[in-house]
Image (cartoon, rainbow, N blue to C red):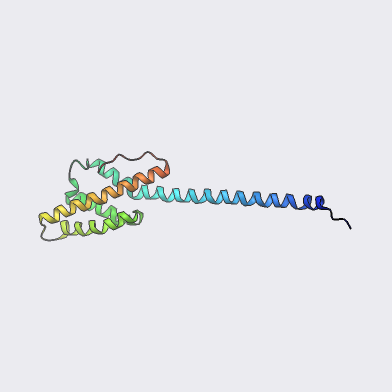
Amino acid sequence: MDFDFQGLIKIFIPPVISSLTTLVVLNITGRTNRKIKMDQIRMQRIEKLYAPFYKRCLQCFFPESALWNRRSIAGEFQVLFSENIIYMSQQSQKLFKDYYAAFRDRFVSDSVSEQDKQHYEECFIQLAESLQTDYQSLCRKLKLEPPLKLF
């Protein structure tokens, strides 16, 4: 009995090529879907936190005016940050802890010292710089126009 090597190749090559093609297509599709999902998450972060923060900074002419020291504007920022902390980077979340304590000392406490005012301003600027860096990074990853550097 002769072994028909060519016949065997003709039988097995098409299914192997088909299977390999399917694996390649599935791999490419999976990567594309993961990238789309990550881009959607990045865009959501921008829409919920970074764009409103940046827009509010521009409306208040930051950092030229120190309007973040006003109770009403500081309250708006505090609410924006608190409600959207899940969208912050880890670095910004760490800075938010200090910012929140300084906010409480500056605007909720009965007695406010000059040191409390200065500490709040320093914490706000550190958090703002971190948020702006995050925003620029997200824009770069999404191939969006980066925001102007404010702080």
